[in-house]
Structure formats: structure tokens, C-alpha cells
Image (cartoon, rainbow, N blue to C red):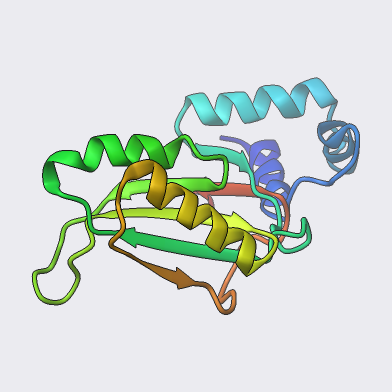
Length: 162
């Protein structure tokens, strides 16, 4: 990794500009070509210096105001089937099996749903409950966002960058 890679990584941590040609805009800022920016990102990814390069939208600005984790109590032999029903729903962004803690947390399947209004999310949960045949669940709704970094649209996990 050289100084140009470091400059690019530092710039990417600020976020990718929301313009028609974001790599060209970054290239102009850094005195590189668009092709060089893209090639350097690809190289940093392939070498494992950057583990992940992904877009993250600000869901609140996009009108997605309700985020809920629904914890389901599913019979152990039925988790895979129920999870498949959940994961196919367009409102579900995450679906995963959890270990139970007997007497403290008896829900073994979680699904994260998003919507514009609470009633919309509640309708989705009811539909998923019927589709999966699982009536025992609890809904945990986010009340505020505690931290979101970096502020831009790029999400980077970096190793070895000073």
C-alpha cells in the first residue's frame, strides 16, 4: 500500500458522493483517473486490506422510519422452514437463528423489518406470522439511532491503515 492508496482510503471513509459518476468525482479530488480509483479499490479488496466496500443508505432520509426486530418462538425442528418464509419477505433485511436462554429469552428466530409507518410494519408482522404459522413472537421497535459511522454512503472495514 502506498500514499495514493492511503489518500484514497481516507477519502472513501468520508463517504462516496451521491452523484452520477462518484468514482470520477473522487478521482478529480485526489488527482487520479476514474480507472485508477476503481483499480485501486479492487486491488485493496483483493489483497484483503479492505474487507468490505458497500453502500449504506440513510434509511430515515429515504422515508423508512420504523425498524423492528421481531423475535419468534419457533419449534426447533421448524426453524429452517420458518426462516425461509421470513427471508423471502421484501420487508425483511436480516433473518437469523438465535440461541435461547431458558427463562430469560425463549425466542430462537429473529427477523428485522423496515417500513414507513408502524402500522405498515405491524401488518407485515401479522402476514409473516400467518405465512409461517408462528403466532408466538414479540416486536422490538427502534426508538432512536445511537451511532452511525461513517457519515457518508460508503461503509468500510479497514485493516492496517494509519
